[in-house]
Image (cartoon, rainbow over all chains, first blue to last red):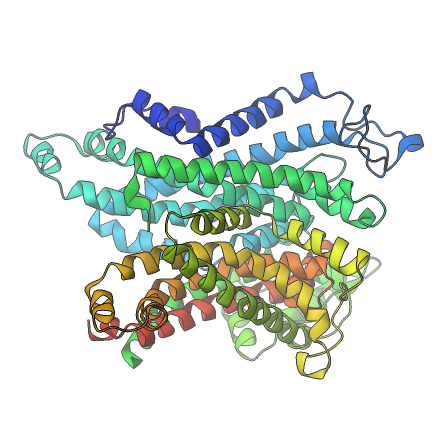
Length: 291
Length: 312
């Protein structure tokens, strides 16, 4: 199940789906953020089609060229086209963030809802969550990379661990609120099974809160993922990943600053758009999350 | 007060065990046999067996874990595979610089964040508010290394104003210039969230009755804002700084690596890259313990700032 599928689940939201889009678009900043993010996602998906060059093709006669008409973002230290690499890098970076948020969101959501539904599990689940919170994501990334070697999977595991405890808390909070409502008691009274209660009565009523929270977290998750990439714990060369590209460009910062700056800027644009969209979505869908 | 702290300590205990267990696993799940690494490539089978016996590697895992905890309690974290120095010794050398970096970042970020947030709240809806909030969203969205790259490139290299590699010494001994760029890089991450939350908290307090009373008494507006509004708004801000501790630690690892700052984070990254598992395990454990400790301190501070928590 993808994030999109979660978002379109039949949620009894305060406003209809069309209403959400309309209200989002009325906010100019949110509209721009949505457009930018859509373009970034499309560019990432279509990277093999629109990339002007092979992102792995090295040409030592044109190393470290500044941006030009042939190479819009210039070339890196081995003469690879940076625009093409940024397109592929965005693909990898976005994929990392999405996989982390989706797996972490599902696990955290399940834990939180189960904790709210079964009081006997509550203490145990929340204790587990506390322990997970004791490990900052970067540390998890470092530990996993230390054990299994640096790879994209190490980063994904770190991002999942970073997502699960917070989502579990938010989901539990939302679910406890729903549990207190009369229709749960009514459902129990007419003999609805636990699984139906959990899914149709509880989960569907919590999904919009969880979804908004995940949107809010997406930017941060991308930042953690790219920081791990920057530290060399994630994608290994020659794979293009934005954080790792920035780290590689660092060695040539004084000769050709664009090699490090452009991938960093790409991360900034993605995260900024995600954060702005998350803020706007929260205001429309779930103002309660505002602290 | 004491009861709160004891309660918090009891909560941290399972987390502490979790930290220890994961670090222990880090030494266990190592792809290669540690005894074989230590013995070297041409070692005889007897030598390897002797080392296994010496390290206690032949005993059951739970016993080894208890043994590990006992050794950690005594400050024995093993020896670095690379430098053969005691890990605890290497950690002792790197903790100071990391603490210095984090404190430097907080000393820089907290006053700026509080000021920006209060200014935004007081000028709610006006241009200043919108500008400050735009800057803080941008700050939250920026990768730590991006800020660092820009500072190194301009302040460090082009304008040659400040050093940008290594640490020349402790702050009190002429080390301040080398601390500035790393601390600003790390602190920049905190300004955004602090100013955002300060704004919300001050706005909430500004609507409270006691602020109206203070104004009605004829107190000057600055006194009302600083003494009444900001002071009360500090409570959520302190909690936030605790929540940001994870961010701060992660940022410290990146910042140390970028600026060749001789701290625990750089030690951890270097150890992982060179497969020095004992050092990596020790460094990760210290960072995780630091994180637990920061959260504990924040809780204590919280009780101190908000006496209501104490009574309930």
